[in-house]
Length: 195
Picture (cartoon, rainbow, N blue to C red):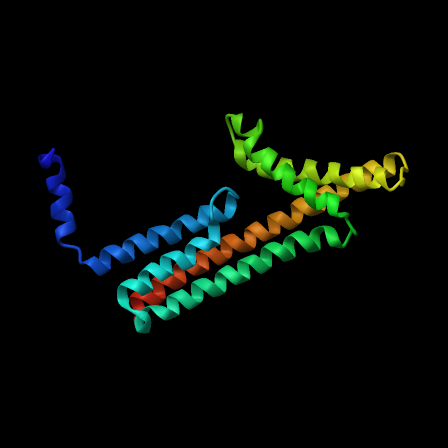
């Protein structure tokens, strides 16, 4: 067993503790990029964790810019998430049941039958689930309020579902861009512009 670990020990012997922590912090931050696409992963919350680890390794005076950028990007991502969700359906005056349905649809889409598909299961579930959930939620609200107008009720429910999913997609795109900026910013602030 020791013979198998010798090359690893030799490779790690040439790396300083600070360099090793930098690589671990970068790896944590890189996971934020796919995390913005898949709701089951933390996403942008990993940026401050990686930057915080780096800040701990090099000290506050050298690490605070990377940590401040990561926290700012996390806050911007939360804002993009809320804005994407609210603007998509708020313009159509969707009911709260549409939002509840979208949330439940997301869970069912990710954990239900769609992940069993051989191609694109969880990603497809993250799109179809909220669409169906928001549409059904809005349909329940319309029927519960006694606003049955036949085909018009069904059409409005589908449009609200599409608006919710559109808002989610715009939010995800914004978060992917923010994650890329965060990782690139971490590299620039920790390597090329150290404190």
